Length: 480
Length: 105
Image (cartoon, rainbow over all chains, first blue to last red):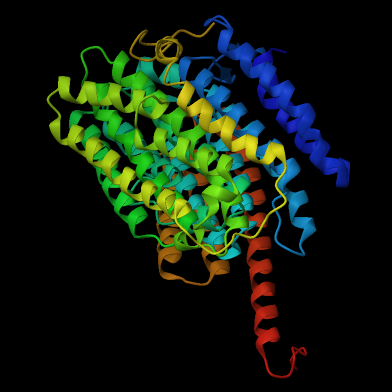
């Protein structure tokens, strides 16, 4: 056993425990948070050669868990987000009025999501990644179903098609190379038809999961309808797994296969996503739909970074910017969904116009929303700013002024739609319903938003962290 | 042309048929079945192409078995959601009917 195993096994254990614990299930989060925080902390500091083969089966049969920079950042951010959301949900269970049983289904699902996400971030085995993709989708669909069954079913169908496209790609790779391990594939990959077809299929499937424009259609209804803690997890974690697997494919396994035109297709789709998501967010009348469309825009930045990373002579800056942006979005978006949930409980209705008077009634929650918005807009000092700054820097250095322009425009549009929501909070309105909100409830979004700001100051530390065993630093990382 | 290719080509045809059905059919239950046909096709491709020259290779077989387990679990989950949605719709319909929601004949 290695603690790398435990990062996956412990949440699965908690999932089983919640199923056995019945009505006491919610309290298990008090045990899970310190356990997982300790493991994530260990992972951040562990030496880079601590890679581990599950059950000591050698490659290509064995499954490699590897603590590279991406895995460290994503696992740590996942622990922060699920920990905060879990403690929030402990005090304020996510349920519809008169449906107490619903709150109980929330707990096994977050542990399933946790285990699936951690396994997905750590492993380099493409078939194992398919299984983790399905674990995360299963949890995500069930979380979305807590809000709207129709939106969840639509999400489920489209996610299944995405998984199968990915699986077909894996099947082709098995036939071509007889291995599905990323580190082995990087040594043998050839730019032939079978490989390109496989990569195309897998990319298309993963883009559905990551909700990149124009395959984002399922996201806004599912994320906007779910209860706030569920939306927070969906937007922060579920869409990131597709992104991380795409990083593994495009930069680790097949850098020799992907050409500039293909990278610009991804980058162009990312740029369109930034514009489209922002414009749609500006047009929304309901607060949670606005936040959901902001996710569509923010996912765009992650893919806009692909050609910038590949095109840079020294990719460390663009790579760090992309990872910083991913982490900052996880923290800030989770915070924003939690804050929005609290605000909507107090507000007269679900529309942005109904938010009047909330700044006086719940100043801390509105502050959290504002801080999260600062990071998402990319205002300094925040993680969102550092990430966008590094990407902008790379774009200008490469003469990619179109991408640079889209990033600046995206920031401006984000300012427009977030200030619209914030100014509504400060406006006069009907006296808000006084909700019984306890301390932890307001603290969770505040802590997450605060972290999204603080990582802006920890830029160089995160830069070093993201570079550990990065694909551009050491091509063909050897297995132990 | 070895035997493996026959399986793989059959799998490709199944995948195409399933995808066509998924796009053209609207009922969620039919869509779920169509996705299962696609899945069966992919497993055939995986097993057929991974077949060695004389002996069968255990590696693709292990992948197919795992894939089938995942597919079964997801199909059950999807079917449960479809049933739940149908029940919810029937309940809303009954509640909005003038006779106060007595079960029909």
